[in-house]
Image 1 (cartoon, rainbow, N blue to C red):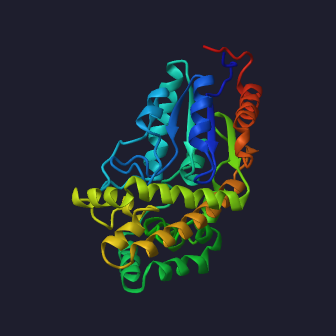
Image 2: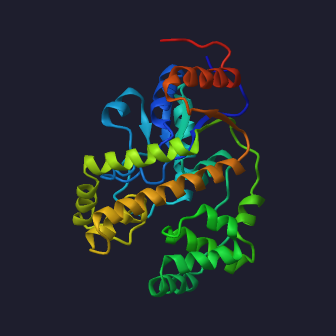
Image 3: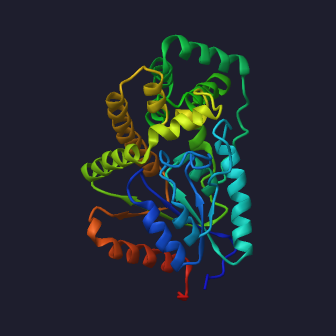
Length: 322
């Protein structure tokens, strides 16, 4: 039974890619009567299953899942839309007497909900955006990313050079306001409209990198190349936001003849390791996270009970098992 509170309760499970969020989230959701909201910016896209490591159909049948397969890959999904949809979902899930449970690794998206970020503070400058697009086309993503590093090293550390849209937005914020994106985020209110329980998963870095490489090998065996081919064949442009995601951009480069398959996979493994490092850097700047080290993979039950104890202490007077 959920303890009474003036604020709606919100459970969050976050961590870097390949740390083991999905398996734990399903167990937690079943024990605590949750509905899962995907906190992954790319799982919203239909047909992007292998590369985004979506929960399988069988796993999704165990627990209601939200914000999965809601858009075609050509759609420009944003953090602002994520925030708006999740706020509505939290109300809806609570209305059914269940606990909303965000699970994912997209730091900005999750934090924007937890602390109700305002995305309309800085306007847009379409001419400036087009100029940055032209610059990136002429000089490459790395050169554009270097411009951001010159003015805002912290945002440059958080954003991959391939994430052209967000790199340009960070440059645009500075261009318009004179403040960096890091300053803009730091100025956001850090009071949450929710009673939060945020659990972060971490593990030994070498083991995490090993799991990342094994996951990518499995994705290739499961048909990642064919998945990307199918999406492009459906009419999705290679410049789409979805095609800038890890696992997609690299395979597009292979399909365009820019890389061999081995080179594309090697690049994907390297970039995913770097992405995991950036995820952890972002999360460690967040407050309210209770960290659980899941390095000992044989101790899943102990990790699950540790998380259950954290959640019970935060939200629950009495746990009822169905």
